[in-house]
Length: 159
Image (cartoon, rainbow, N blue to C red; front, side, top):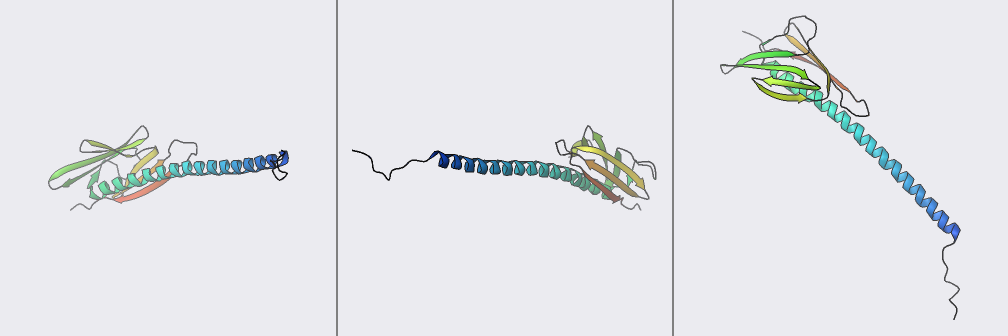
């Protein structure tokens, strides 16, 4: 006995149309996923650079506001390192900031801490009891992202 006439398969045209629509959807989704990944990478680089300069600013300001003196010479050209000194509770403290490779290091009484990574430049100058710290962070990556910050830090008044 023969099959019923209402049983039909897909025609070649219907299959080609379904394949074309599927390819269009896959291409669109692939491009959207690619853009999302690229935006995420760039955003991560931006955050990394911003975190570097903000963290450095935190430590520089914290030590600078406690400091009574510095090794920087008043009105001299900017230096790439500096030492701050102060006394607290009868104990002498020093914090030295310097670049090691691409990291800004803080040596506080012999304890070394990395306060910023990806540092392209850091300069310290001193004029009228105000320290100016300028820093640029440039994380490695394809985007060439860079973040700059300049901090003004007033030394603690001396009696």
